[in-house]
Image 1 (tube, rainbow, N blue to C red):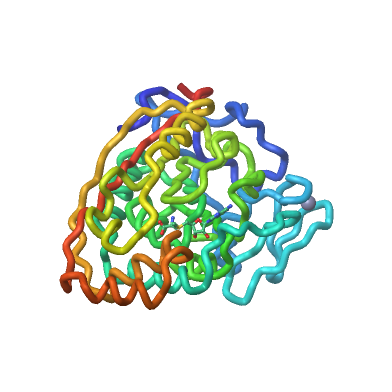
Image 2: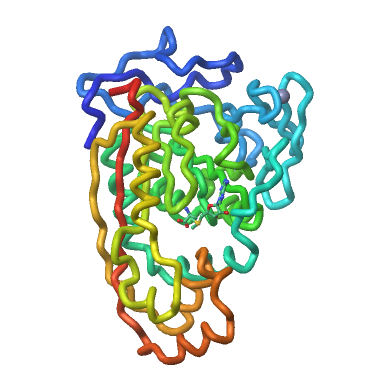
Length: 333
Ligand SMILES: C[S@@+](CC[C@H](N)C(=O)[O-])C[C@H]1O[C@@H](n2cnc3c(N)ncnc32)[C@H](O)[C@@H]1O
Ligand SMILES: [Zn+2]
């Protein structure tokens, strides 16, 4: 699972402010034989207690792309662009974005939080965290989760990595990102649009994760450090089994999934593909939360949904089928 190639450190020099080219930076230590995606000299100290402090050196100004600093709850670039840190500990670096209609609503986020807190996706999170840990070895690193939602999976990934690892949760929904800000002490939570240039500096992430969320191939490749990897989770064919028809849910468009994978292939090459199959035991409340946290929430009449759920066995046992793929940027292969 470890990077098959010897690369360079995935960890940046603390505190550097100059733009970092995507290619190997001069003066970085070469990895030991068998090179790892995670490596490097350690991290800056947390000195103001703010969760963004762990990741501020890796963030980029959404206006001018320069580096950012954090002082008195304001994130600021050297060119005077400033962004307030919200009371809940996240920052919005959405400048210029119209705010996507794809953002999860407060109701969807609340349903997702309920569903995840019940542990239904714990086996999936454990599998993703295990894969991340295998990729990482013992070295620290930065994980960027694009479309992180409430930060649940990113938190499990950070738990599985060295205590120095930090994460940036990116999501366009401020309702989700508020939760992500408190999901783990080492998550820096940022409102951002994955379709736009990511507010992350070049070559910083040891791992980019993307779980049921929009993908931006060129940007994921840009922010990855040499030796880093992209981990993508998508629902597989047959996900949720008979519930899809019984409740009139949107089914996963496998053709669309193939097209998305093909578009990613312009920037990445797949190195590992695994299927994770879990058994979901869902009582009626869990089924409702599952529907309300996803895209079907907009398509199903609430009264009809409750009626249909009432007709289901309580609990219902359905398959959770997930495709986990690990990719390396083409430049790094
Ligand atoms: C299905 S949820 C998955 C959340 C999380 N990865 C998880 O597995 O719990 C999709 C997430 O993508 C976010 N999203 C949708 N469009 C986005 C965009 N353009 N940029 C960033 N995030 C976006 C939504 O707000 C939502 O939180
Ligand atoms: Zn700026």
